[in-house]
Image (cartoon, rainbow, N blue to C red):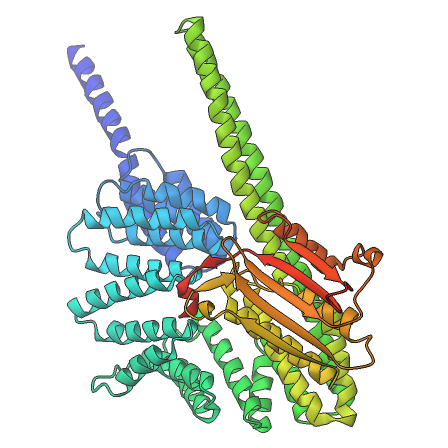
Length: 619
């Protein structure tokens, strides 16, 4: 009897011990499935993820649990394109990182989360994630490689906001790390990245100096991708300096080496290939090498292009068809296709901005409700612990805190709404003007082809400047003046000998770094021309003057046209009315108009424009 009792307890102990160890036995199986997920097709990833979920237990190693969460985040981000779900799993993966970095895979967890945040405009979250990773890395040994990835991410992060100072700072930190590890390939690429920063900010002397130093270097890498990057930047520099023949050769060499890269079929690299084809296509058109341009056009037409590349391709294709003197029917079709594309993109852009604005308002309301609920819950807890006087004091303090918080949130919301409205306004080119330009080009094609060509090139330059400016909240005042000059030069081609213009800037603007919101002045200039000057039988004059005041830039737009009566002044054009409404949120009486007085012939418009100082935009 005693023997059987002892045997029963022994069997029970063994079975319990086996049950406890069994979950840990799942770790090798999970690791095997994780490797398959990383190497399998997208359709099979979900199958293996479901298998992994059935094997997950709490007492598995942190590295296995973190990898499983990361792969789920990867699936929702890369395969399903659901960033909100991927945030959840990526954050769960990095939650297992304690005090310092223990595994190489942790780099992937933090970088993928930060990049996903950044790609979806959650910029503060992206920077916070990479800063957390940097803290953990600095607590670890042999952290140089991880620091390279961190500084590279931060260089890209500040590039998104055109913060040249920060970009250069992290670029130089990377250079120090590469020299320390004697990484000649990355040293070479790092210098090219620095030259690219200078090129994007129009600092051509610095860019040329760096590119020349690479060209004269005795030790050049044999890596195809590095040679591609070098030739690409040389091509960009030559193009900006109007050396299109050299630029075309550099672009062709860049394409040849990029095709030799082992990651040529990678999606990100293939996007660079498409951009390079369009660069060659545009340069060939500029050089009037239409047969070369036609060859690259046929190749580009077979690509799946994103909206930005498609816009450039359609425009250059239309230009090629006109300059190579295709029949008018083909050219009209290309013109109509390009115009339809611009309209479609404009509608999408406006809808997207309105959606973000509405989402911002909804988030603010939810935050206020959540804070109110938290305050009420705290109030109930305090009622049970403190006297009525203390409760009343706390309640009053809570209400005051909510009021301050509400005011702060309202100010932030108003500021964001103002920036969005400004972007919407600056992204619009007057549709009547664009339509008139296109029809003017069409009318000049048969009668004055040379004039049509010049008109088309000027319009393309104005369109590109307008689209680039619409992506920024503020641009240098000299850039705004250049936009106005291009616009008025276009109108002079359309209405020759009909008017003259003069634009005056204070001398203090030269090195002041003054930046203003884009495209606020053009609608008033257009009103002066169309409603004031054109009805005259004689030639008119338009004078623009920019004067710096303490809180704003005063822009004076004066013409000697026929002016208007008081009743006409009340019927403002929609674009100028929107601008006045926008500026009224930051400046009192932003627009004032005088017309047909005894001292003044024509119309004078006084426009108050907010400004800020930013020297980075002048680089």
